[in-house]
Length: 91
Image 1 (cartoon, rainbow, N blue to C red):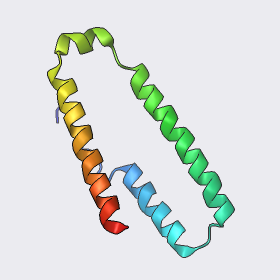
Image 2 (cartoon, helix red, strand yellow; image 1 turned 45 degrees about the vertical axis):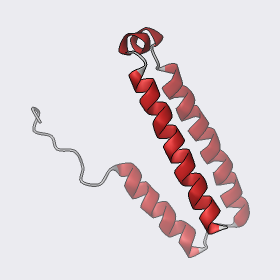
Image 3 (cartoon, rainbow, N blue to C red; image 1 turned 180 degrees about the vertical axis):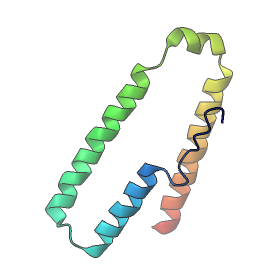
Image 4 (tube, rainbow, N blue to C red; image 1 turned 120 degrees about the horizontal axis):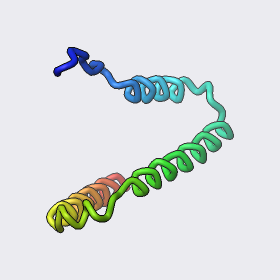
């Protein structure tokens, strides 16, 4: 790195995720609170996806060509099939 600043060993979102897992496993959070948090999570995820989509520049996407789009579609199909297989095995 040119500036000499190293990235953190453990990203902050991973720390937050681990703390959330620890809190959830203690049973201190009530079921209604968990439902509210689930709704908030869905709203924030939707907002993040809209933000990502709004940042797409169609002119750059056309310049890059179809190969990245085909790769993205193939990745999506693989992940969907893998997830479906995992769900089928657990039920």
